[in-house]
Image (tube, rainbow, N blue to C red; front, side):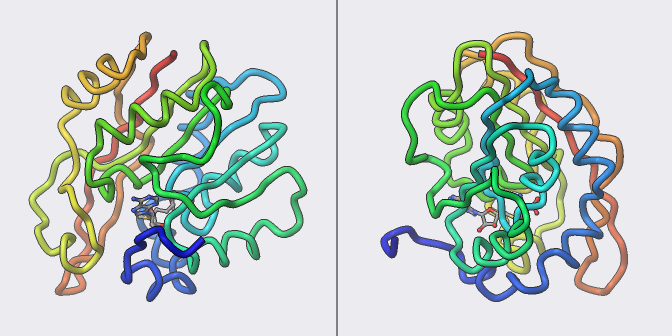
Length: 209
Ligand SMILES: C[S@@+](CC[C@H](N)C(=O)[O-])C[C@H]1O[C@@H](n2cnc3c(N)ncnc32)[C@H](O)[C@@H]1O
């Protein structure tokens, strides 16, 4: 596919992303969020804004089928390489607000550090919910609001995090119930323009369809 606009930032950092990300989001935080989603046995799940497949990697041994979606072909190329040993995962080029799947495909949809890149967060949440089965779970992990403007320019962020009340409202508006937005098990240790570490708090938002 060639008609999906992807961000030049992610084309530039694709090969270094796993190292950059490791300072921001740990495997422990990822696995705690996945556990909170409480997936059923043999789940079919999606990882939206999968990047190099970090969350997909956490899901492959807990789900029967994993599909990772991302707008960046360069990030997806690394994801395919990273997870080449697993035969229950595939990666597709797609924008988060138009997933190329039928309604009610997934038992779980995950999105880690993707929502702050989405031009219209509510629309992308509604699209993820469209792709979920009744009873399915949405698990978004992202930044709480912060004032580090440099992240817009240096990391292509569109949103400087989110208010948890907005996330709760958007989940409800998208038709979810049993909504729980709480702290992740750790902080995002962003490295600022002067090289200093700036810890940012992260939420885990769970909701059921
Ligand atoms: C901060 S990275 C997070 C990647 C991965 N989830 C992780 O935890 O390492 C954000 C990802 O979202 C993707 N992305 C940005 N805008 C997108 C969009 N509109 N649709 C789909 N993917 C998008 C980028 O290409 C990038 O891979």
